[in-house]
Image (cartoon, rainbow, N blue to C red; front, side, top):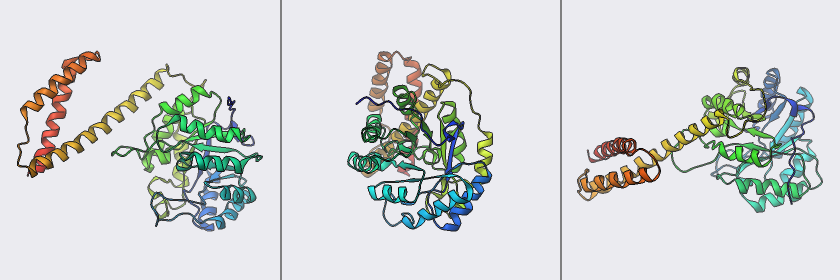
Length: 355
């Protein structure tokens, strides 16, 4: 079935530029929810988010207050007039949320990665007219993301948007979840009208990265931002490092520049620059991985009483890389200088281990 995805409908708030959704990672207490919501309403936020069910990567941490927290969100609606949103991962979550009058649902990255879970949610949502936001899956798989959207669409849902929260990787990196902007750009190319909300909180994992990531998303003509905010973020029971206070959120939003005009194409220079930024990040991530392997080699050499410098191996490496450079139409001299710098750092790393 061909999907005809249209703009998300949010009772008129879809016309906001950008759409702003904010609130704590988790609903922790009635007081925390209402205090945060009140402060966010003062900053002009019109959609409040809070996690009711919070399954964590490892058991033992705070996993959400559960159904008891849903009336708190209902109270937020009554006292502030904001729409309220929460994450659902099971059919029971869907039923409880709808019964509590939740306005917007979103489906998390881990759930989206599981087609069985997505089908169960799609079946539970049949016949329900409610906005549903689909986060990207944990791994960078566009087809898996589209497949999750399609399961909802096939169940008769038409009010669907997506949240781009970045992608996980094993190696050390600047961001908690790498943005990989080219993936949502390709999603927009295939479905030009789809509403894309950026989640800079989960992409960055640190509050100081929220503002620059938000600006990058707006520069790419994303439709909105979902940003975690807490009245006392340092005491938050989950994801404390990435949450902003409502006043800092307000200041951040005021500093963002919203571009005019139509969505940018991949030929636009700003998009090309974002691609360069992404490639540079990938280069640094791969260099980090290479140095990790160099340290492992250094440990092996120390344990087997081998010298750090292996001249034959180094000469062979330079020769092979120069051949690759020529084949890829890259200056061999340029590659030679890069490889020498990398080799010098690898030797330094191994020498540290030898001490």
